Amino acid sequence: DQQVKQNSPSLSVQEGRISILNCDYTNSMFDYFLWYKKYPAEGPTFLISISSIKDKNEDGRFTVFLNKSAKHLSLHIVPSQPGDSAVYFCAASAEEGKIIFGKGTRLHILP
Amino acid sequence: KAGVTQTPRYLIKTRGQQVTLSCSPISGHRSVSWYQQTPGQGLQFLFEYFSETQRNKGNFPGRFSGRQFSNSRSEMNVSTLELGDSALYLCASSLVSGLGELFFGEGSRLTVL
Image 1 (tube, rainbow over the protein chains, first blue to last red):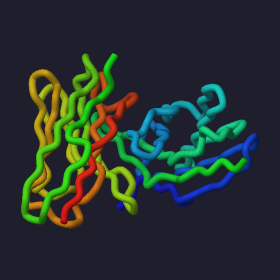
Image 2: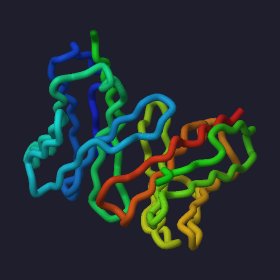
Image 3: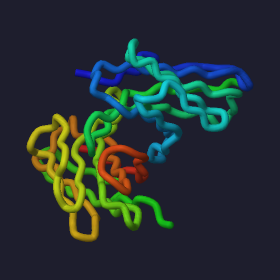
Image 4: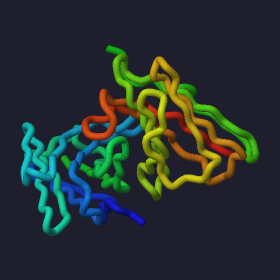
């Protein structure tokens, strides 16, 4: 059973425009959410996180929005840059030591 | 400071064999988590160790096991390898267990023939 779902396997966005990556979750006990970015042949790297007590967290070009009632979060990247082309993983945690990841969304930034 | 180091980076085994993968966390990090990445399934949680104790385990068969040493280094072992075990195995460390940023290594790519 997939508790963290990223329903779009891939997304293409023009350079300079906004990229919006979506994530849904089923476990209402999740209280901490993270986004990771992965380039080929590298391990995932942490991007941004949000606690369930907040609905928005911003870090430079990256903003994560959390809608607890809809069990939905999204990552906004503005403006999108060529180096943002990567696989993005949504992740969530409900208990210490266990972070559950989605299957990832491959983002292509078009020139 | 040095990142998470995983060895070996690549290995090829045959069905029925066993394999041991090693992970050295960032200095000072006491939590080590292991994940399996396959093309169709994304990152799947295997287990997490903190101060030599397994604190959480994912839904993998008992063929998958791990341990953590007093210096926080961790190993995972897969016995009686199956073709479906071919994957990228990622290790991640963090300062504390659970909440917070995970720092990933580059992974060990296992191919089972």
